[in-house]
Image (tube, rainbow, N blue to C red):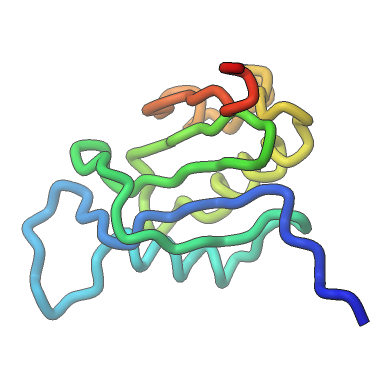
Length: 127
């Protein structure tokens, strides 16, 4: 039996994001709640959910990144932990379906259009 194929796309969710709120040391962080909400909502086939401790975009609230081999990487912010999961799943589907990761602007969820923090070229594009 062969090992399962890795997902073509990874969705990184910053679990330490605070959304500019004072941190109650005993309360779950909004980023962790967003990760849990995305996991409960589900992602399209071929997209793997990966929790990360920091995407270093603290001034941009809850933050996620979409990446894949040979694809552009996108970082999106200002996501709400209570309502963001369906938006993220929609954006992940569009990203997965774009062979190079470049999703046409009009095909992105509205939140992604207005809250892109960074677009990073694939390493292969720089050679």
